[in-house]
Length: 370
Ligand code: N2P
Image (cartoon, rainbow, N blue to C red; front, side, top):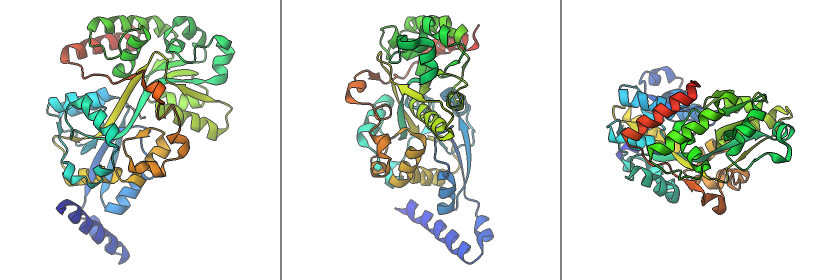
């Protein structure tokens, strides 16, 4: 493969230049890459390792919202070469011409993907090469075991969305802090499921009524935000939150490491939740295309994928990673849901422009608290 060979030459040059003290000469080749990824979504040394191995200098920016990424992608000229949208956003962005399809022959390590996961994720998009799954997970509830027990005792519905969505419970937790993700497509479908509806609904009326449920609980919420809860729940500054699976486990781990006395648990509510897939994707106007492919290929290497999973506690799209993933993660029902839990999982469909407008309207009324 020509592409891989040319990269090897760059690596080889960088390595020999370093060895002979000529690093500055090679650095002037200025191989660069601009990556835009979710916050708390990569091991601490992955980028440095990639740079050392390839000689490519990475600018790594972060977001915590598909909507923020989408706005940049639709506006164009974002400057990014690799981004990580969730499947439904990738599908919509692709239809709008914001993404280029991947040339899978340029990603040798695509062969490492778990084709069960990748195939399932591809169905949401409708084609096979829009993206390569990085991580996948669920949306659920994280809570501080002692703080909830103190306030709700045996009554605590720590298996249901009711803990957050029923004002009867949320009002009793307002003093210790309740938060909801600022992620309409990860929250509204679950409110619909909580109401006994179908999480894959595309009926605007279901979204209006989900908005009513959220507005009723809004006075009891500390905030609506997607990345603040990790540290806050780990530190005991909030006590319950709708969170993404891995973020909740990262919080639990941070509390454990800090030995601060807070025990954080996460559950997939019995009413069901959404299963989402985040893909590596390339914007249509990416300037550093070769380097984008080199990066995606690197991220799909089994050992690299495993190191990232062991740090962020999300499930991997990569089969080859499994032998290096911490068994505690592989066996964790909150990360790799059991067959029983899987029965209640659904994948959010790709909304059309009209439903998208309804979602935006319902959500802004809720999140602004007006
Ligand atoms: C990482 C959040 C990624 C999950 N902090 C959203 N799909």
